[in-house]
Length: 201
Image (cartoon, rainbow, N blue to C red; front, side, top):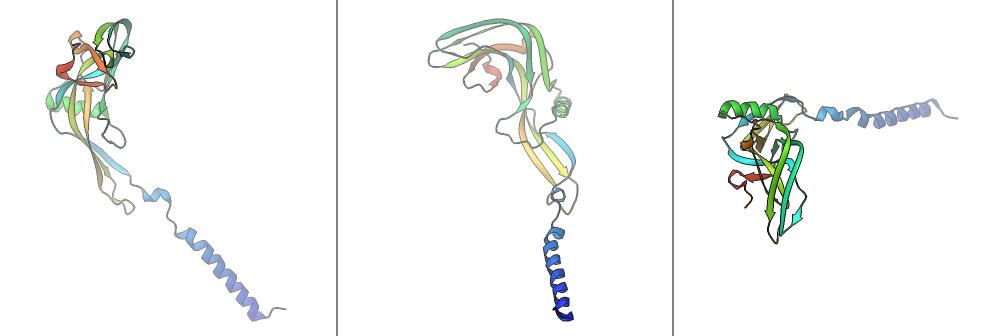
């Protein structure tokens, strides 16, 4: 039969065991408190950039050379903005904001995307030893941009902001005939060619 003293020791031991079991749970911080809350995002245009051509959604099948490709089709051709394939931009890019700032600061007329419904006639020659396709390209601008994401001040957030540098590639707004050209798109496609090289030769 347990004495009063032994009963007291059992009760105390149970309390100590209960407390030691609960403490780790009580002191653990919630996962949501360990992140940073975005306070704002800004974009800075870092330069005037240069002219390029961006590949549209109008293109032929791939063919190994030597080959001649001639196509005519009625459909909607679209062109979209993008950044360099090696660029890392967390959270994506607000292309509308970037276009507005670039157009204002450099008197340009780029847009986040464009589309045109028409009958497209395009062609190219594929030389021996090359695999390529014919593709319609649209005039565009490539320019440097800096994205800065600032965070709300918090004991749970160890940083003030993050900065991402990237190269924007944005088509011009106009859909005139001179805004498009057809050219050879060599495998593997990059979707971008220098302004001086939109040619079939």
